[in-house]
Image (cartoon, rainbow, N blue to C red):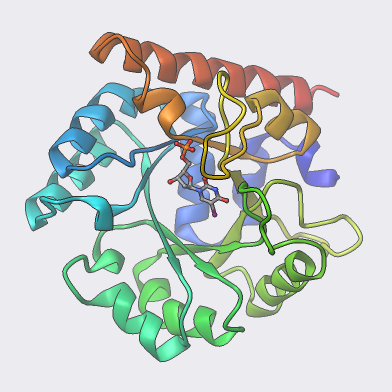
Amino acid sequence: HPTTLLPYSERIKLHTNPTAKKILEIMDRKKTNLAVSVDVNTASEALEVIRRVGSSVCMVKTHVDIFEDFTESFVEELVKLSKELDFVIFEDRKFADIGNTVSLQYSSGIHKIANWADLTNAHSVPGPGIIAGLSKIGEPLGRGLLLLAEMSSKGSLAVDGYTEETFKMAQEAGRSFVIGFIAQNRIDKSDLIKDGEDYLIMSPGVGLGAKGDSLGQQYRTPRECIIDSGSDVIIVGRGIYGIKGGEQAVKDEAERYRIEGWKAYEERISK
Ligand code: 5IU
């Protein structure tokens, strides 16, 4: 695949969306393709994890609907940390409704995701109206969207034709707002991708320890993701924030994944 041989720095100019450019710039500057997913119960715990791992990551992924103590001040602190520690904020909201509803969910409610999240994601199952509804809110703010083309969990129905149609839906929407995919593989296949197009492939389901959990999650190593499958960003949750040994252990584990991910990327582009 042509993209897998290009350094992140050379892909910046292939994008017009400000969030896509920012992600690639940060990856290049901080030498990291690691995103940490902070699926903890409280906003205050999440901020503690982010302070520890922030310097090792290009992106912090949140599920703010998990927090018992979500407030506006959490958002202020998160945005402040994203500037100090130089990372992008990705709210893993997985929108899945019609365009009109998702535009309200994205802009309003308690969380007002569009106000602070650089990046969010959506299922393709409702059809292209979901992209139109979200882009109406997010594009004027310079935000980016990922479509869910594949999932890491066992038995996922997002395979084969679904994955391919998801790619085509993104392609038809254009890359001013849709900047890539959550996927397990380089789904922007070389026979589908057009000249000058570039997409960011971000993969959850990454771990150096366990092979999965009891609820269908399946883990691959950073090498498998980046070299064998050609993905661009590895997303790690429990493998980092769940490590035993206290604050320093979490920090060290994030660095371990950053180094693994970066080594794999350097090997990939040198092929
Ligand atoms: N996540 C997945 N798989 C997917 C998608 C999202 O695991 O296919 I789409 C999310 C769920 C969780 C994080 O927030 O990524 C992975 O966390 P762990 O590394 O703790 O399994």
